[in-house]
Length: 126
Image (cartoon, rainbow, N blue to C red):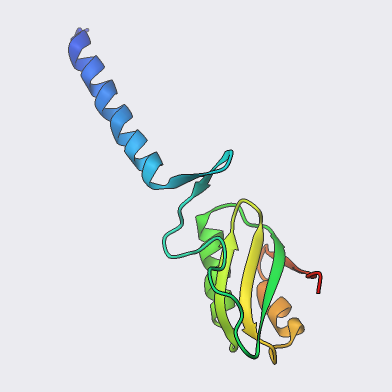
């Protein structure tokens, strides 16, 4: 049996730890008390406010478990005519949109309820 050099083993472990730490750091940011994944090009909240003839809508979405789910829902929402912006929060299981006021809620719900995803519109206090 070949003996391992303890210094080489320690160096390999250190290098692997640094590499894993860098990957974890790139894929998460601190938000209050929790780690939030940074999803490439998928915002977790809307930065813009609705303009003239637009409305903000929010949905609770069950069935999301990973970045792939977030991407699917985001892409699906942006395919709907009249959707101006979309954000998906994986951890809170919510989807936010800015849409034209003329877009019926039923069309949005029928598009967002597919495969394993179930969306329910959250009513705002207006």
